[in-house]
Length: 281
Image 1 (cartoon, rainbow, N blue to C red):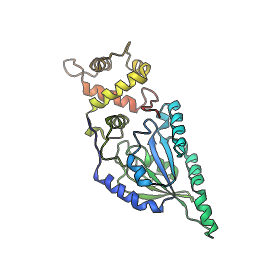
Image 2: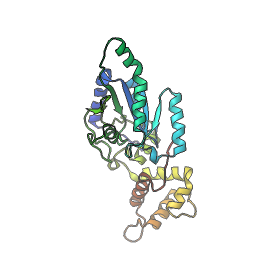
Image 3: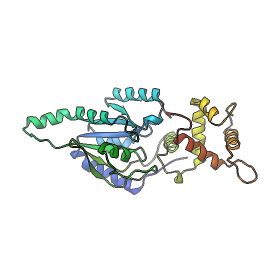
Image 4: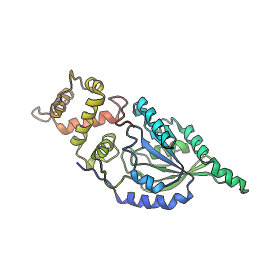
C-alpha cells in the first residue's frame, strides 16, 4: 500500500514558506512525539536551510516518556534543541519562548549594537505536517483562540501572522506532507496516529500494521485491552478474537473486520492502550 496525500494547498504552502523565510528569526518544527521521524517532512530541511530551529515534540502526553527522553537527546546531538510539549494542556509553553530568545539573542544583540533601540518582536515560523497540533499550539502561545483547530488533518489552509505578547510574532502555515512516502512504514505510522485522512485509506491495512506493532512492542497492553489470554500469530485470528470480544459483528454473527479496524485505531488515538511511541531513535 502506497499512501500519498499532497493537496494543492500544500504545494502552495511550500512556495509561500520559502518566500517568507527571509523575514524569520527562528523556526519551530512541530513533530508528533509518538513518531518524531515519521512526522518530519524531509522537504523541511531543504526549505529551511540554515535557519535556527527548535524541535517541539507535541502530544508528549500520549507518547512513552522514556522514549521521548531518548528523542530529546537524539535531536540535541543533531544540534537542534528539542522540547516535549502538550499544546492541548499548555505544558512546556514557557520553555518554547525561553528557547527562542536564547537562539536569537545574538541576532538581536547585533541589532542593538547598530543602534536599533526598540527592536521589532522576534519572528517565528511554525511548520509541521497536518494534524500535529499547530493551531492548538498557536492558540496556547497567543493566549486566545485565533487559529482554527480540528481533529482532522488539513484544517489550516492559509498563512497568518499572530502576536504572542509583545516579544514574538508567529507565522502559521498549513501542514505540509511530502508528495510520496518512499518508506511504506512511514505512511502507516502517520495513518495510525491520524495524520492522514481516514477517508483515503484502507483502515484494515493500517490496523494490521498497528496490531502487529502492539503485539511486538506492547503485548501486555494489547492482551489487557482486549481480554486476550494469548496473542494469536495469525492476524486474521487476532482480528476475530478482538471482534468477538468487542461485538464487532455483522449480521449472521460474522466478525466485521472494518469495525475491528476502526475500534483498534480509535483506541490507539484515544490512549485506551496507554502512552505509545511507535518509533525509537
